[in-house]
Image (cartoon, rainbow over all chains, first blue to last red; front, side, top):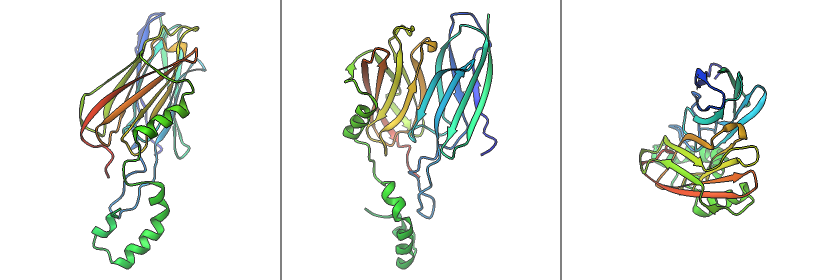
Amino acid sequence: MADIKPKIRLPKDAKKGDIVEIKTLVPHPMESGQRKDSKGQVIPRKIINKMTVAFNGKPVFEAKLEPAISANPYISFFFKCSESGTMDFAWTDDDGSVYKASEPLTVA
Amino acid sequence: MTHPITHTGISRRRAVATLGLGGLAVTLVPLSAEATPDSAKKLLSDLVKAAPKAGKVQIKTQEIAENGNTVPVRITVDSPMTDADYVKEIHVVSDQNPQPGVASFRLTPASGKAEVEFRMRMAETQNVIAVAVMSDGSAWTAAREVKVTIGGCGG
């Protein structure tokens, strides 16, 4: 699971004061812990349980996810552009791994 | 409770041994749908202290979901999203899934707009319930029924 690459879509050009939608998707099975394999054994739960977003180091959005979230979790949220900077994303897996990504946001 | 292992043609002895090993997992992970309107309500009262009033929250989703594996849900809350008055949290539960919890979102005035979208699993036809907690501590709620053609929790 080392090569999980989150996909993030945010606008290239934004003006100060614009409220923009930021869309994210992480390729991940989100194994719910409810399914069984062909031998009838429960497949252990392994999901992304938390997503955090910070802009220029300041937390701006957080999501706590449960097994009811679909595989390849897609989350979108809004952000009010005030200045240029970097948006840092982090997703925490049940096994403790953290998948990180950063995107620049340029505000005219 | 019928255990699927009895249908696979494995000998009874083997089946009993496997059951013994898997017993703990089986008790921890119930086979039937566990979330009920009551357990969903209880989870919400654990998550949100204030008693939620109806209003301000809108749930946009499919009326009929053909595929319960991935049902898009968009939640919008009426709020100016200023430093003085903003949506702090949005909690989402459902009442007929194996577990009632779906997701909890934490917003800030920097969000600009109190709106989130995600895709969820639905085991069967059920209600999605969202509760928004405002910066002043008040809570608002809405519920929406989604009819599911093919459930999304099977193995």
